[in-house]
Every structure is written in C-alpha cells, then in structure tokens.
Image 1 (cartoon, one colour):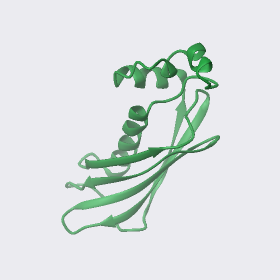
Image 2 (cartoon, helix red, strand yellow):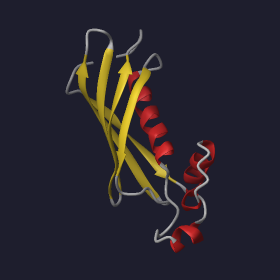
Image 3 (cartoon, helix red, strand yellow):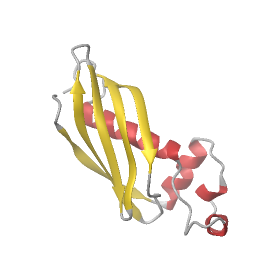
Image 4 (cartoon, helix red, strand yellow):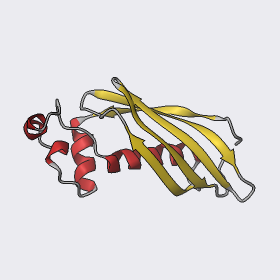
Length: 131
C-alpha cells in the first residue's frame, strides 16, 4: 500500500431497515431516524440515516478494504447530504499516507443521489496481512 492508492468503491443500498436498525443499534431514538410522519413534520421528506450509522459504515468500508488485521485508530467524518431510504451511497477512499510505524491514513468520500453524504479521514494501524 502506498499514498495515492485508491480503494475499490462500495455501494450500500440505503434501506428504511438499515436506517432504523442503525439508529436502534446506536441507541439514537430521535424520531427523524424511524418515524417518517414526524420527520416530515420537522421538515424532512423522510427518515434519514444518523451519523453513528454512517461512522460505522465508513469504518467497515476501510477495514474491509485493508484486511482483517487493520485496526481503526481514528474516524473523523463530516455529514453533508442526508441518506434517505431508496437511495444508494457509494463509498470510495484514497490512501493519503503510510508511515513507517504501520499507520496509514485514508481519505473517504460517500456520495448518494443528492450529493456528498460524508467526507472524512480514517487513521488505521496496519497489522500483519494488511496490503
């Protein structure tokens, strides 16, 4: 692995079940993540994915691409366009640095049908067997 290397993209179907399950799993009971009617009353066209679900998907993307011995050290993300049910989010990544101490940094981007859902940086420790 070297700086500039691009990771293979990952397409994630943004389903109503994924949104609700992610909110429940992260104990985020905000109604905008599970109740479409209340989400609309608050100005959203539908329920939308919470940041903790996105954070988990970004972490999964990087570790899946870099191998099972990869350890997440830091995930720093910023949300943009919401992930609504029925859309697809495509995650992509570029290795921005690889240090001699076995640490690497990956810039991650997640886009959906309305724009950039997430941008961020993931720092990982590369264990044995990592590319």
